[in-house]
Image (cartoon, rainbow, N blue to C red; front, side, top):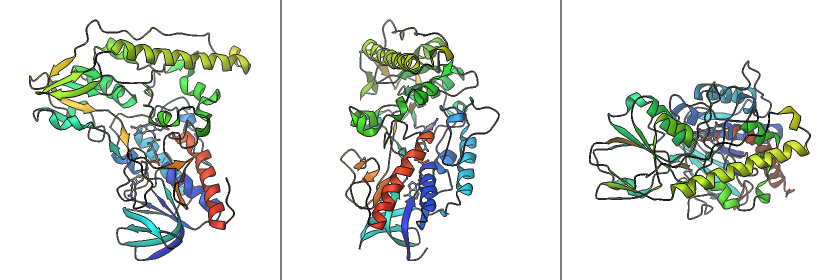
Length: 416
Ligand SMILES: Cc1cc2nc3c(=O)[nH]c(=O)nc-3n(C[C@H](O)[C@H](O)[C@H](O)COP(=O)(O)OP(=O)(O)OC[C@H]3O[C@@H](n4cnc5c(N)ncnc54)[C@H](O)[C@@H]3O)c2cc1C
């Protein structure tokens, strides 16, 4: 790729970048989509073997593409998601260049210069769709863990058989942590789960998938400028959900029933020992309280929208059981723990972005996807424009709105 020009460059060919391309094409804005791997790279290379979407098939909708298979209430495997995104790329004839890593984006003349292996592209606008989960977040004290314990992130973990012998300490009880804890425990290795702030949800509520409620009641439609504490909403951990054929709930009670041991939030490593915070009871009751509040919102919506008779009776679930005396420390040198799996979240990577729009915490400064530098846009970030933004089903509205703004900017007729 030598020196070139385009009106727009989209970085990343996941569903977000492809959705941007779909709407850019719809407005006849010439553009290129640059992708360091293949289309749907993260679903091909960064997911563990057993992963299924936690969102049901009917919810995996992309612009112009709806699920039409035989199992609308099922949950896709990572391979099936790759297939879906590939079909979307073909259907929208996205001008994707694969195997092209963007190494720099900087201001240039009236726009930006995007440098990628083999050359540079000068453009008016850039859409950053490089993903919100490029790197696992691992706390700094991981460096103090004794070398005898193997450390993995969800990017390295594939299946339990590849773990070393011994117990496994899974850190983090969001979607990734609870799913891996359950899988590893079922494989016969004893799991200790370190639990911090988490979002508890039942898989089904009053006979419907809980994400049907999120969708239908409008909770996921809440706009970013209506959210009370946006910074907090954008950092919220993913809900404790798993997509399985039996639609089972995977909360901490379910894990305890499997034999998983709960400990508090991992605070530090001292002399080869993991030190955990107390306060599990408070953390559990907070998650229970928030879940019940959300279920109450669903109930109110069902009544006020006249849908109450369509769904099952109101349900409330057992409070999360608190272990009698959770351990406050664990000797990592004693051989009890063979591996640690850090399920402590993910973060984006903007090392290539030479425009001063990244805050001290490594997040892009933007207003609903309009980045703090004229002509720079973002898609695919948590609560970008709505609560559903980070999910596949959230991209259509976001990409349309962001491309509308972009088109106005390019044509000199800005939209708000
Ligand atoms: C473990 C996990 C489970 C999830 N489960 C669900 C779920 O059940 N349902 C749901 O709706 N959502 C789910 N999500 C959220 C979301 O759908 C995914 O994160 C999805 O991959 C985001 O799509 P994206 O297009 O924004 O980013 P990505 O899919 O990450 O795409 C970004 C692309 O940019 C490329 N890229 C990055 N940097 C560069 C560069 N410098 N140069 C060129 N290319 C670059 C990457 O290779 C990648 O292909 C999950 C996320 C994770 C991490």
